[in-house]
Length: 214
Image 1 (spheres, rainbow, N blue to C red):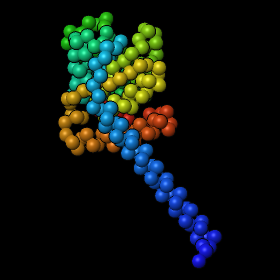
Image 2: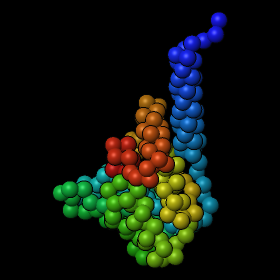
Image 3: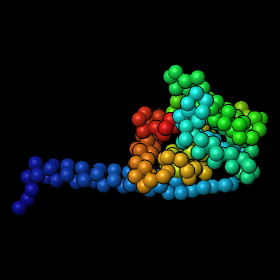
Image 4: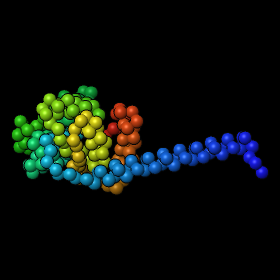
């Protein structure tokens, strides 16, 4: 029995909806896999700089998250992996210090030469800090970067750095509160998947999904 026009239209709509759901699932699943995959990378190829992405600081004292990133960058510098360490991150409302300043203070206190630290105290999200980094890097002719952040943040931060014209790869921290439990890992993989998809679509920070200030 031939289908009525309404039945044919209904079937077409169902196929379109199902096809869209399948494509969406593939895109989201593939992105989540890439977030997980890149989080496992730790590339120690020599670079001009290690870029420490900002996180919370308290009156010039790095939070546990930021300190873990700074310690990792310090080790990269001591091992000769990078020539400079760049500290990033702006000032939250009411703060006396930027995240970049707090990072620089910590590194100087831990015997990293001050002339080997580049402070970029701008940006209240990952994209803002990476764009400010791009300006600072071009001024100093720094072209290659090791991205130092939490593992799950690595792919999005690397993508943004590459969009700023940098040759970038990740060497994430393996310590700190954001990498300790499986539940934490799953939470950040989901969040970073959403944030990365949003960035690809909008080329803008993802608001509540952003991972810079933790």
